Length: 307
Picture 1: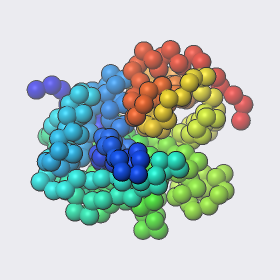
Picture 2: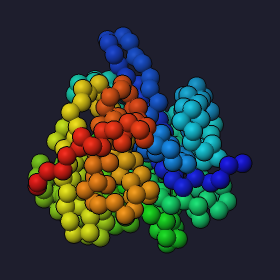
Picture 3: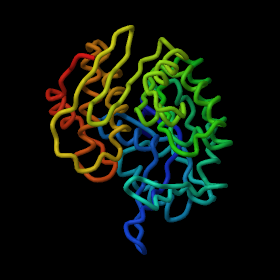
Picture 4: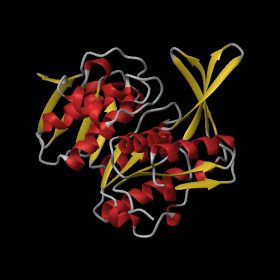
């Protein structure tokens, strides 16, 4: 059996059911934390997704896609429960709801992961709707606390969705205080803090954990990185956007890759690598993560700019 992975993403893998016309639907494999695991694997990092999927046709598709991405199969659990579905009934702007009251994802069991995996993991990522779904959320928070105590680096992307209501607030704060790296977008900040004042929301978030590194993504305007008392801002390369789905997941993967494999790099270069990875994901339809060669090509076209 191969060596245990250096990167693990724990959370949800789901199926997006997309309504393409009045009487036509299509399905896509997805899930924020699962996408981050795939993005890291695409960059060449030994990676795994730690979560549970169903045994039916939806779970089979996720399992096959995980294998195709090169994710470590020992971390994916298959449970004889219903699938988790995201029903996207309007595409522009997106309107959606989730189906999964007693679905497989909720039955994830961290005790079934490979022995000694934590000793090999350099980074573990959390986020997405998995942290807004009980009892899975409490399991993941407990795992994050355990990893933090063991000295494993934690990253967190809340990735706001409508299920993150007031009941999500304590978990949001707990994970923000635990994380070494936090990624948020303007949309996340407005949704999580229920405000239109992005700057105020971001300042509040940073006050919970001033020592963390923050990646603040701003869509076509690029992103900013807050690290060790310094702020960098970078604009994306000029590209023809095919689809922005998965760009945020690719950007946090890009940042984590840079921190893992280029630890001595200048902070602005960490940011440029993250922005290049996010841009690379926009060059193909669906949550298609870029490979390392593409990110390195786009890196040179990501310019640092004044705040």
